[in-house]
Image (cartoon, helix red, strand yellow):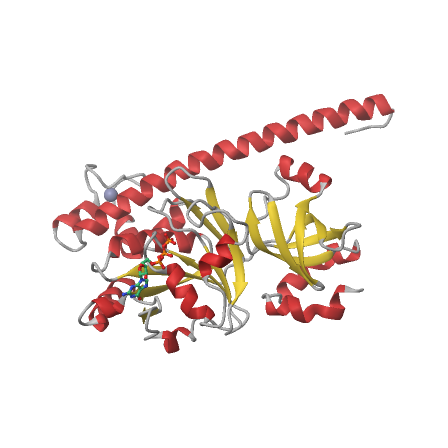
Length: 363
Ligand SMILES: Nc1nc2c(ncn2[C@@H]2O[C@H](COP(=O)(O)OP(=O)(O)OP(=O)(O)O)[C@@H](O)[C@H]2O)c(=O)[nH]1
Ligand SMILES: [Zn+2]
C-alpha cells in the first residue's frame, strides 16, 4: 500500500505540507511516515497510515544516532519507518526536521522533551494565589523552543474573583492567551476550545498538582478513559512512569501529557532567555560593559532601574537566575558538540584506514 492512500489518519495527527515536503527523500526510499505517540525508554509507539504500531530503532539509525547525525526520537516526532515481517512492528530509520522542540529539566532527572508542539499550555493553579515567577520560568523555557505559549489558570472555583487573577497575569504577560478553568465542574471549558483546535498539538506543562490530569479528563469527556488509565496501561504506577503519550481528544486536538515536575530548569541559549525579559534586555544594552552580569558592575543600567523601582525585585532576581542557568546550559552544549566532533574524528580516521586497506583513496 502506498502511504498516500491513507494520509487521512496522519492528518488527524497533525501531518501537513511542511512535513510531507521534508518526507520526500524518505518516500523515495520506500519508507513510511509516522508520528511518535508514545515514548518510554527507547520503546516507542507510532501512528502510521495503516494504524498504530510498535517502533524500534533500526541498526543504521542507531549508528547515525551515535554519531549525532540523527537525534533521539521523542514524543511528537515525525519519522520515517521501514517495515518488518511483523505488521505490528516497524523500524525508525530517520527523524524529520522538527518544527519546534520542548526541552525541560526536572531536578537533575533526564532531559524531557517533545517535538513539533504548536502550543505549550502552562497549567497553573490559582488556589494558593498566582505564582508569576514560576509562570515566567515556564514561559522562558517555552519561548526557547519555538512553540507558542498559553496560560491555563486552574482551580478558579477556589477563589473569589478569578477574573482579577487573569487581569494580573495579563498585566505581566501581555500577549499571552490566558484561560480560566474549573476542571471539576467544567466552568471555562467553552473558551478552551479556542486553544484545543483540530490538528493542533498542545503540550501541557506545569508542576505536580497544578491540575493537568484533571484538565485532561475534562478535555477527554466522561465517555473516555481516565488519564491515569492512559498512563497506566503498561501497569506501572502513574507517579513512577516517565512515559509520555500524545493522544487525540474529541475536539481533534493532539495533547501531550508530561509528568509533573517540581521545578523547571532552562535549556536553550541566553538569547532566548532574554526574549521573555524584553524590557530588561533592552535596559541591559545601556550597561557600560557588554558582558555585564548586572550585579555590581559600575555603569549597570539594569541595577540602576532596579534601584529606581522601575523593575520589580523578583523579576530582577528571576532574570539573573535564568541567565545563570542558561549559561550553564551553554557549557553543556559546548561539551556535547566537542564530544560529537571527537566521534566524527574517530569515524573519519577509521574510514581513511579502511580506505587504505581497501586500496581506494579514502580522503
Ligand atoms: N477545586 C478544584 N480542584 C482541582 C481542579 N483541578 C484539579 N483539582 C484537584 O487538584 C489535585 C491535583 O490535580 P491533578 O490533576 O492530579 O494535578 P497534576 O497536575 O496532574 O499533577 P501530577 O499528575 O502530579 O503532575 C487533585 O486533587 C484534583 O482533584 C479544579 O479546577 N478545581
Ligand atoms: Zn548591567
